[in-house]
Length: 115
Length: 111
Image (cartoon, rainbow over all chains, first blue to last red):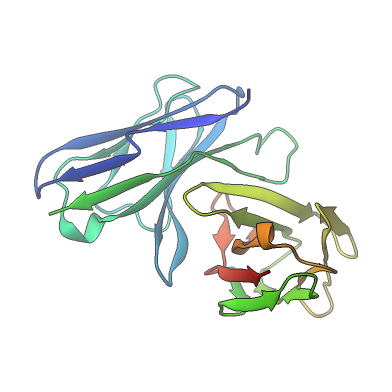
């Protein structure tokens, strides 16, 4: 089954404690991206990657890092989480760049709370 | 830059009612347009898309037509069901690899 898998689904942590949210896709997509969803603000892109070792900032990259060492994986790293990073996070992949219009395939989301 | 504006919700309807959720956009060039649906507790799923002017996207009884003259992509369904209750997002891609999303419209359908 084609899917995007992210973990953990739920996480409560404390300010300053580094954490990583993993994302993996099995569709051989070159494009992967991270979003945060906040009430009243819709989805905002954090980072995206067009291919292995190629990453770029989205609209709200501050406080986040990513890496793309393998095509299927695109982890999101919060080096020193703060309460304003409490949010619902989504990973997505896309065949964008391979003739598609950029339709996205989303994971089920990771709800992060930073105390 | 690009922007997407969609009607604020929640939209509350009775089962079998007609649905319209308005979406207008601002973009340079010729963007591709999408509707995504998010059911409670789940990620977003692509509902339909249109990639050029006058294209009509359709899926599961939902339709939307890419209107370049009015820069709109309104979502419609002739007869909604309780199972259509969800949040609907209008989105566009074009000019960069950063999609632009609307803020989402919550739809509540009562039996």
